[in-house]
Image (cartoon, rainbow, N blue to C red; front, side, top):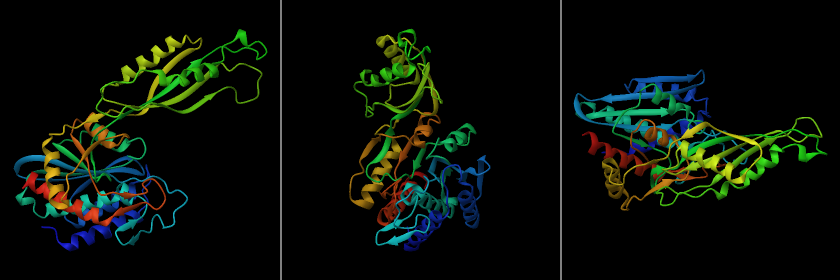
Length: 378
């Protein structure tokens, strides 16, 4: 049973977490705070440093009885503060159903909920059948170095991950992947008055990227197909020169569906180059960050338990959907091979001024996860 004080304690913890700046790659202060807080709850945790100012945190409640391993997970970093806030981004405001502050929805509310739920189950650990883990990672808003490093350490393993991201309705059970491609074109320099004697690498690259939309779309994919997006293009000489540019490069992003592997994407790019009969020499390089796409089956046991609990506490059916962007769940499923569900309290203005999270949704999510974990571990 969840008591009223747990909700208020979660709100206060959320406000404290908001007040601790934690932009990507500068999460040390917030994970140290969480580690100290867990220690005050008689919970041991471990910090995994990625760099001097960036770290992940793990904790574990292990039962003497056999059972599943469930992970409550989230990222502790936020995007940078931007202009336009009417509320203070680091001094949270609580107004009616809303708590305003940077990272309130994405996703310090989820972190606060995970901590309080973990505390509750630590107090009944003698009754547990299985293992409950806590996983808080850095740099989700950047290159996902946090989740990738903790997976590489071999610290992640379990039957299911509940990522308490701001995905309240619907829950996310799959998402596109991401491939970032560096396109390099080598032409031939010549005097600009004699262009026929050279090959303009910028013009060739422009022709190539303007035809990316002609690459055939994958048919019958479950995930939503997305186009190639050009992020930047760079070529020519830094100083003025009446010379045809012999080099150009561009960065192109592709959110991938389930059958678009690295090899497939590269083969399509080389096919387009051949089709266009370009005179420059083109090379294509996959660069970081890379995320595999993923899909969780609708009949996944722990998803069904989540749906049951959601219906109990909201009276509504929990819908599911596939994300059009990437998150750490891509790595947990695609690299660590652990089924991951994104579900947590949401609000508004994520990555924008005056971000907020719903208190009512926080209360519902606390009750839902408490009920889910009871069914899984008790």
